[in-house]
Structures are given as structure tokens and as C-alpha cells.
Length: 156
Ligand SMILES: CC(C)(COP(=O)(O)OP(=O)(O)OC[C@H]1O[C@@H](n2cnc3c(N)ncnc32)[C@H](O)[C@@H]1OP(=O)(O)O)[C@@H](O)C(=O)NCCC(=O)NCCS
Image (cartoon, rainbow, N blue to C red; front, side):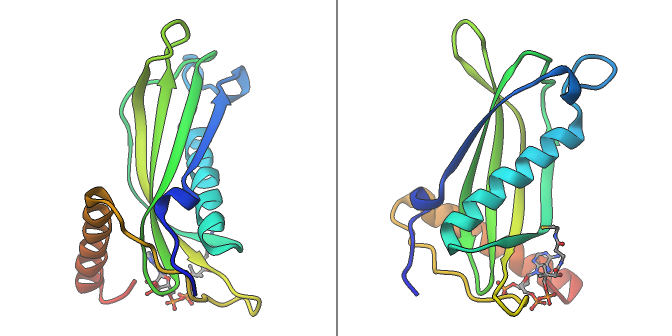
């Protein structure tokens, strides 16, 4: 199976926050942002594996700043690590300033997707090719988190 670079699956999505995305105080509803995070990660996972993967886990989801109706929101998803049948993906959600285009981080999360074969069972993912120091740092951190999680729970 051919290894792929993180740049090959990097995904960027742009959304406009409309009234139907908002809560009673005019800021984006958390569940809508979570859905966009899931979609953005699933596209990155699909670009890496070339087939459909399912969400197994969401970690470290933090809403850091409110997003208002009318804001343009940019989501990015990047593979941090590929394991046997699973992948850890880092997602950032940024608000774009309407006049300056300046971006501010509003939320971030790490998702784990599992690649699914034709038999409906987990199947192998292509290895992730780490080129840069940052690629190596992110992959090592993801492997460490997974190791600690497995040691803690005795599973996944
Ligand atoms: C995710 C799922 C496919 C895993 O299936 P499973 O039979 O438990 O598979 P395994 O135990 O063999 O685990 C397969 C991989 O998933 C990982 N995994 C499973 N559950 C996990 C979890 N909760 N967190 C992190 N990784 C998980 C395992 O570590 C393993 O990774 P690896 O192959 O890279 O080492 C299964 O639990 C499932 O279908 N869950 C529902 C998914 C879903 O409906 N998502 C929402 C809609 S897309």
C-alpha cells in the first residue's frame, strides 16, 4: 500500500454561518460546528484511504471563541498519524474577519476515523509519510496519546 503525505489529504472547507446555524443569542450552535468538524475530517480520511471511513472518536474538542451569524468560517483537517486501520486527524475552526480577512482560532479537535472495507470491517490504511519535523512531531504525539489511552483503558 503506497504511503501518502499529509498534504495529499489536507482538507479545507468554508462555511457561512446562517440563522439556522445559530443559538438563541446569535452565535453558532456547538452541534453545527461539531458536524462541520466531522465532515471536514471525514473528507481528509477519505482522501487518505480512497474509501469511506467512520468516526470512532472525538478528543480535545474546545470552543475557544464565539462565532456569529454572518461570519465566514474556515475548517481545516490534517492527518496527524495513520495506524493499522485508524487515523488521527487534527481539525481547526477559524473565523475570518470580514474586512481584513484575518483569521482567529475559534475551535479545535482531534478525531479518529477507522477505514472500512467492503466486508464492513476495519481495513488497513495507507502509511503516512512524514517529511518535515512538524510531520514527525504530530505523528509521535498521536502515537503517544494512543499508547497512553490503550494502557489506561486496556482497549482502543
Ligand atoms: C469504529 C469501529 C468500526 C471499530 O470497529 P471494531 O470492530 O471495534 O474494530 P477494532 O477493535 O478492530 O479496532 C479497529 C481500529 O479502530 C480503533 N478504534 C476502535 N474504537 C476506537 C475508539 N473508540 N477510539 C479510538 N480508536 C478506536 C482501534 O484502535 C483500531 O485501530 P488500529 O487498527 O489502527 O490499531 C466500530 O466500533 C464502529 O463501527 N463504530 C461506530 C462508528 C460510527 O457509526 N460512527 C459514526 C458515523 S460515521
